[in-house]
Amino acid sequence: MRAVMSKDGGVFVVDTPMPAGDGVLITVTNSGICGSDLHTVALGKSGVIIGHEFGGYTEDGQLVAVRPTGECGHCRWCITGAPNRCAEAVSQLYGGTINGGLADYAMVDPVRITHMPAGTDPTHVGLVEPLAVAVHGVTRSQIQKGHNALVIGGGSIGLLAAAALIDHGVEVDIVARHPHQQRAAEIIGARNQRGHDYDFVFDAAATQSAFDMAVQAARPGGTIVEYGMFWDPVALNNTVMLKEISIIPAMFYNHAHDHNDFAAAANLIARSPHIAEAVVTHTFPLSDAKEAFAVANNREAGAIKVHLHP
Image 1 (cartoon, one colour):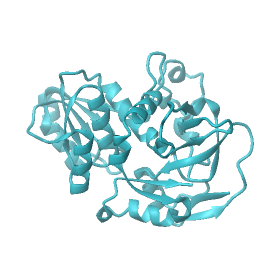
Image 2: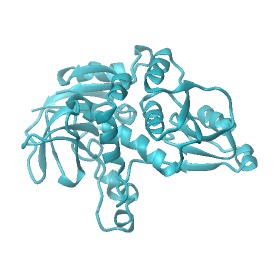
Image 3: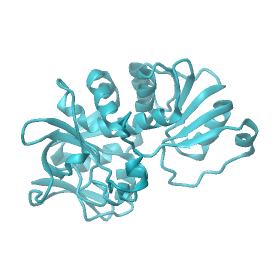
């Protein structure tokens, strides 16, 4: 089968054996390129099939999305519904440490499968994983209808956070740098930033300037939810103290007894296909993976989320 791997800072489509062993064989319909994929490729990562945003059909014809994170199932975090804190969350990550979904087929653990609602577009399942990240941050924030929110960052996570907040009944403003991001935000239903004094600020950029903007925009006693990965250190300042701002990191997704971030994301993308239509700006066949990664890595290309369709 065909699969995408990286070496020396580049990506290549290679021929590999069909996946074998225990698990459920998935015929992949749709895989996304994440910003973390771009970083790890640039760092020279190699050895596994890339891709942690994917889904497809099981052998019995069920359309599913795949949760890429691992879990041991018995540590304090797994049994309390917070497997994103389990040591195996990253150590057993599809597309990170073990073979992922940028391929024709993938073998996955059945506990990581989320069945998609009937009628879901099979080319949208690759968006469930990043949308689950957004849903998790909204859940962690405990924001309620009637609060106001600002999202900083018009990339895929920022736009998906806006979509999850709007679905939660919250009016959302957004800071989106580029015109194509602003157009996507309008489709989703978010407005341009109109001032300051927000109850909640969701930072999807994770840079010093974005964090400083979040601090300025949050009201005294407000909350900042951090989605992004800090590839460079970010410093706090005294305004955080003077305003008594709460900072909540949101990493991956959880599935407690009363809430499942991944299932919530699957249901949201199924009933709101306009989200995918706004966020997925470029699609490529799997054979054009090298070009797809180049587009995803080019800020001038107008890309938000790039998907490949095996």
